[in-house]
Image 1 (cartoon, rainbow, N blue to C red):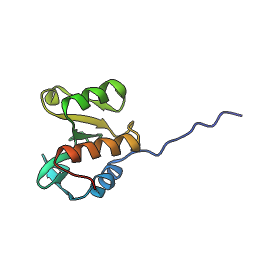
Image 2 (cartoon, rainbow, N blue to C red):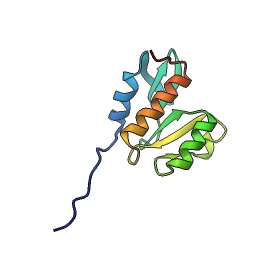
Image 3 (tube, rainbow, N blue to C red):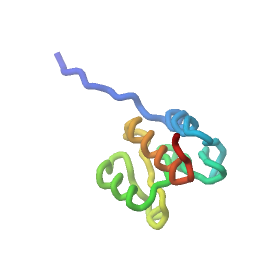
Length: 114
């Protein structure tokens, strides 16, 4: 009998949308022709034009930590290297890591908990 592989639920853009819109004051719109999320008109996340990744606001220190700790889930392209953003591979990120990245991005856009 083959060992059963544990399957975690796939993260999709719909998962990202639900998580982003749970954040207080978050609103959905568009950016560069893709679905995007803002807090008081300040962008904190958007679907990358490839449709497979999410572009999420992240300060440079947080971004470097994510890239080192979880390179299968978080990555950069040359376009974003000089900007405070990180890309998230929806197919490989865990729901918890995505939720944390979106919460941090929302705070960076001016969100306050509590």
